[in-house]
Each structure stands twice: as C-alpha cells, then as structure tokens.
Image (cartoon, rainbow, N blue to C red):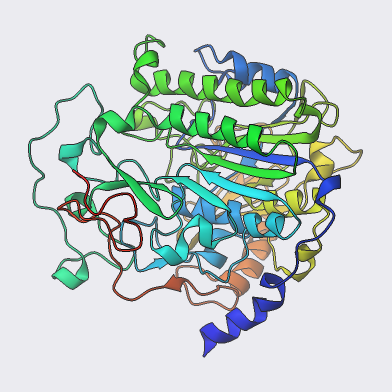
Length: 494
C-alpha cells in the first residue's frame, strides 16, 4: 500500500503533457566520466596533455568545489533525481548484475523533466541504477539507450572484466559468491565477484553483444560516434544527451590507438581518449553552429581510485571515502556566449544540482512538484552577481552521514576533525579545538539532516522506497542465453 501511495503521489507529474517551452531552452549535454581523479585532466593540474578539455576550460567555467558521492550508483542517483543518494537509492554501496532493487520507477529523473518539457532524450553509456527492465533508462525518461547497465568490471574474469589488457586472461573463473537464492551470502543488490554473468551491451531493449576484452577497447569510441550521430540527427530540436562513459574505470581498456600514448599507464592513456571524445563532441557542436545554444557539463561520478592510477592532487583520500579526494570531482561547464570564458567558481555545487538547473533553464513547470535537495545553480554558471551554491553540504557514504560542510568548514564526525578547506584543501590540520562554536553549528546542521534522512540506518522519514522486482535475472545467462524480451537480435550470444 505504501508503494502504491508513493506512485499515486507522483502520478500528476508523470502524466504531465510535454510543455511547449523547450524551443526557448538550450540543449544539454552531460558528460560523466567514471572514476576520474580530480587532477587527471589538464585544467585541474594533470601532467598529460588534454588539449580539448584545456580549451573547454579556457572557453568556460571550472567548478572547483563540485561534489559527487563516494561511489558509482549513489552518485548517478543524485545526478538523475536532484536528491541526496540516500533519499532515493538507500543501498549500502553500489548495484551489481541481476539486482532485485534499483531506482524506483516512480522517481522522476532529469530525463523525464526534460522530456516533459519537449526535449528529445538519450542515454549513451553506463547506467548503473538497476539492470532489470523496470530500472533501465528507457523506463526513466530516455527515448533511447545504448550502453552497459553497470560497471565494466562486473563480468567474468575469463572474459576480461577483472584485469587490465596487459595481463593474461585466466582460462576459467574461480568459484565465486552466489546470490542468496543459490545459498550464497550476496544481498538484494545483485551478484558479486565471480558469480557475475556475462557483460551485456544494450541497444534500446535489445542485448546486441556479449562484451569480452576485445569489445571493452571499443566503448569510448562507439559511445562517442553514437553521441555525434545523435547530435546531428537532433540538431533541429532541443535535446538532452547524457553521456556516462565507462572510461576510466578499472579494468582500463583504451582503444588500441591510444595504448601507450601517455607514456605513463593504461589509465592515463584512457584519459587521453576521453579528451579526444570531448573534442569530437565540442567540434560537432561548433560545426553545426549549436555551440551558442548548448550547455555542456564535464564531470566525474566520484573521486579517482588512487590505487588504480588516478590522481586527486591536492586532495586527500580516494574513491569510496568521504574525504575530499573521494567526493570532490573535476567539473567544467561550457556554453559560449552565456558562460564567461576562462572563469572559475569555488561555490559549493553538486550532482544534485543538474536536474533543477537544467529544468530551470528549460523552463520546465514540472520542477514545482518535486522534492529536491539540489538547487538551480544557473546563476553560478552564468556568473550572476552574488550567486551562491549550497550553504550546507552533507557527506553520506551509504546509510552513514560521515561529514558536513558549511562555507570553508568541514567536520568529520568519526574523527572529530574540523578543517578549513579554503586554507587546507588537503585536510591536513585539525582545528576543532580552536573553533568549538563552528563545530557546534555544523553539528546542528547534521542533526537536522539526521532527522530527515537518518544515520547508520535506511529507515528515516525522508528516505524513499527502492524499486524492487521479484526473481531478478541476468540479461545474459552464463551459457550465453539472452533474457526473453531482450533477445530480438540473438537468442544466444557466443
């Protein structure tokens, strides 16, 4: 009954007719890189050449205090819904293949907000908000989808998903953990380790490939080609292109043309290919004279994993943590003629802000019906006087509230450490003893958030329901059989 009430409450929004205002709004392109470090690109201090991203920064805006979440699925939930991940995707970590849960179908995504405003919408790349039919992009406001439903390491070791291409592939998979229905210790978030099924590539509602090592090398190029084609085909109407790359998540599979180009590592080679991809997108917009009417955002889904070659300098910490290196991500905004060239902002912004920002710029009326944690940051992007970001930002990891920030001040609860991020971006010096009043104020902010979303539990007043299905199945079985309904291309894949 609670689930039905939740769905009925959102029904007036989901049933809204398309608004005839899109002609006045810009196109939107949201490029989301996987596991990119804060200093992995030139505008944020990389030691490798990234000329296209350098130009993007030179012609646009750097957001130096932009926040994601510590890991993939929560970050994407925030990006799609405009809410803290715990509010809309209360899971302890990330989603895995054949998960019984995912983003609730009644949640309203940025795709739905823009589609209702008259935009064409597509998702090209990694989704990671649930791989069952009810959770896929085409059920969440996207007209079309091309990509894989979760991370590129969530497949069999023998097919290249657990090791870099410079390592020999194991001939067989070691026996891994099975799901609960098989007597294993996995939870409802899906199959883990070597119990994972073959990695599927989807085109709309069809599984078109069983992704092995050779196919992994082609992801970035194929996504880019598909994105360019989409821009060309939709240039006469407003569009939203969500481009979440698999790059540069481990295992690192740059195209053969980029292997060795950085002279450093496969991870850095793949960053070079990401830069090439951005160049293709921006060059296409310039050639079609769409640049003056297109807002392009470049960002990462979380901080980079330092142990896999990412560079988060000068931030402390790595992917998976609520230190700055785990959640503060390199972010660029580009809109020639609207965003001032060569500018930067230290305003506190986040992935939760893209939905309200895009919706506002598209003049979408549907925003009025949504409960959001994000805010419209278009005044920040457009350089309006006195524009501000978030007054307070909360650092959640799974169910746990681990830190809070207001202005320059960040307080970590477990360690009772206070940092002034304006003067100590690397979180090196604890100044809590000198600023008891600030600690007390930050604690008040945290207490207010705990009353809404809780701490160390998923049961809290403001936490919404997960989507849930019975008897979840892999899109490709271990023997290559394609799930019914996704098998229009082939019943079985080698």
